[in-house]
Image (tube, rainbow over all chains, first blue to last red; front, side, top):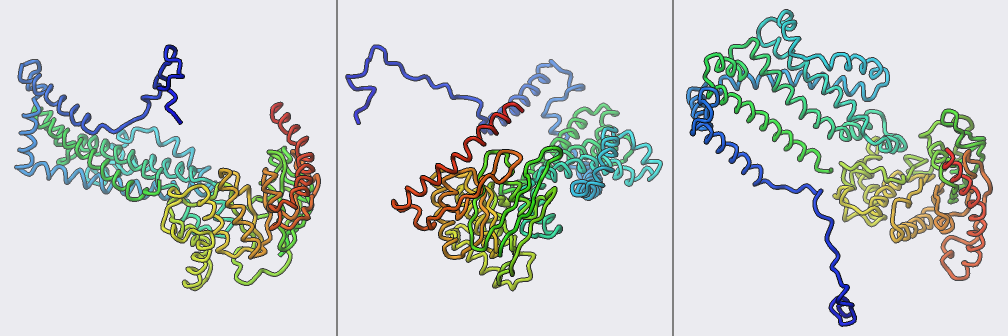
Length: 273
Length: 257
């Protein structure tokens, strides 16, 4: 068939190309844009301090923050404080997650547990958990147990909500299919409910990891000798803003690392999506 | 094995969807159920399969369970109901896992089902890597693995394109030619019913009642022959006549609601 546009039979005087209107509204990856934005922000920050637009006491330049961080690594204070925070996050998050998974699962599969659990969770979830730290200190003492309890309590409720919502979101037709083949209850739980709920549970982990990070810092600021929160508070009290910001950078790096680990876990476990 | 449905009524709260259904599905027979949207076809199948509890009436099977049959009444689902996190092979194996079978027998059943459906090469694939037709074949292979006495098929082809529907209808015909499996086949597609069924049950609009049961005299394997076309056209016209008024009234009722 001849080219219908370029043949002499086309009415060239009225010929108009159809304008493309389908662009945009399609997210694309731009990894370099994020790096460039970070580099630009750091350069602006450094420049602002160097030309004297901001006092180095109140906003030290990134180079000073970097030096403070290097000093923390060299004198071992980074690891000492990070180790204390990681232990508190690890134990508190694990306790809260274990409890949350158990209760959330029960509420997901048993109507009675849900009828009892939903009002209780709704009542306790909005309480700012850090407000309970003084109570936990009275109960468990000023040591580690009160911090584990604060983090665990903070992690528990969002985990419960994430787990039972995730179980609700498992397509019912898959359960009916299993029932129609006579699969026993335990097999339905293991083979359908838990794997089907996994995306929602992992999304919940992402939220609870952030909550654990916030709570550990807050708890350490209230009463701890070591830990990133205690370290930042002490640096602030001594007006060592470069050290303070170095501590904040460590928290940010910690948050990013936890997020990256969870992303890795999602990629491994949810390859089927 | 026969399936007997007696004086079956089903309500969702105040809404009656099925009303006093009596039906017998004979051994080796393929019985299609057609009717307008909302007439309770899928509910009828759910009740027959024991996954919906009827408001009134009884469903029973009659006859011995065939040798090797692990799940006498077995479903094939409209939306395939495959576990997306399991491979093709694992999806089929899932329904055998809770039966006390020797491992070799279990493997043989999975392989037999997948080979019969032409899926053996794709056994490691995840459902997301398959076309709609292949996914439904996995659903059928899964059903065959338990060697059912009665197959319940809930609009198994409605989510597929016309070409794939044709191919799967051939698969069903081939299956029924070899296995003589008894089947209750719910569809809204007259052509599927005409091609596959021995008898067609026409349900009225909601509440679904049996309006008529039409027998298709022409043997299934001769229905594509030119000589059969006149008879099939006549049956089709009759079925459409029964369906049309019900479908129009059902549409009007939905619009009013």
